[in-house]
Image (cartoon, rainbow, N blue to C red):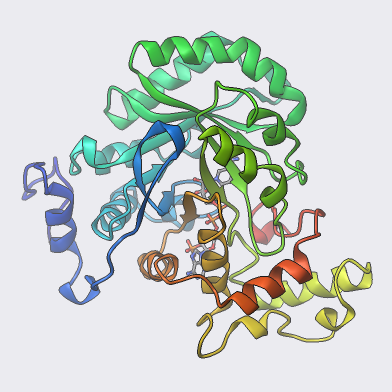
Length: 356
Ligand SMILES: NC(=O)c1ccc[n+]([C@@H]2O[C@H](COP(=O)([O-])OP(=O)(O)OC[C@H]3O[C@@H](n4cnc5c(N)ncnc54)[C@H](OP(=O)(O)O)[C@@H]3O)[C@@H](O)[C@H]2O)c1
């Protein structure tokens, strides 16, 4: 069996290295005729795939399910072979080393690598020195001399002034040195249901990229984030598009019953086991999960839809979903009418499903 670069029997990295390796690892049957769509990530000018591979979430490329680092790195290679060129990781995920393994087989300029460092965790404010040390460690683990997007990670609204005024200058300095190409910030959706953090950040010129939670039952970014990211040329990365709700029909029904009982959604939605079933029909989506990806992907202002997985079949299905056209307008409009007002944090889990 072919191995990752750096191991015996591995082709040397070259311009088409990733594709060559991935084609050896995966049978021809999986190389469908899908052609990736690209977009420009705001004023960074980066040309990025509309599908982005998240190396965190509950899957962490499968490491959380017991996969090895080699298996996880192979998943990255398969993603690249499917046309994904945006890879999102973070110091906190424990997957930067895996990204580094994959990068040995991928020409560096063929992928856009994003990573992150915290601002405040466990009652400790991260100093500029600590953030720079984190960046340097990320570069070391990934075996690269620069990251394309370096973001402050999961920033809460009351941490914003410190992030911008104390850490911002250090990030700008690292950018001037070439270790960071573009500066970003990601919100903390688990508690910031109204995008209070990003509502401020999109007005400040420091940030070139933001990561925002957006999904069928959490649509607030349409009003509070996307108008200004578009006006100010800020690139957007979407997270929580599926997370642990939109691949779990029983959970959708359960949450819908609770929302209906609170009067937050129409009563009938709480009286059926398949409240989002109206999305699945011949001219519409094949599954609820597909509907979730298509809904987010075609939202005006959305650049890259991130998804995490440790499962090669899910990887391929998700890419295929993201390359499908928008949902039929009647379905999209119905989702907006039914759920566009929700700001209660449905589906914004901070813990794996097992913890619930
Ligand atoms: N504040 C932040 O900066 C922040 C917070 C959260 C996430 N992120 C980033 O965003 C990325 C995406 O995270 P997310 O929060 O949106 O959640 P996610 O990791 O995309 O969650 C999707 C979950 O559903 C499963 N799944 C994926 N495709 C599926 C399919 N086709 N059918 C059934 N199940 C499927 C995955 O498990 P399987 O392994 O079984 O496929 C995964 O656990 C992360 O990896 C991370 O890079 C950033």
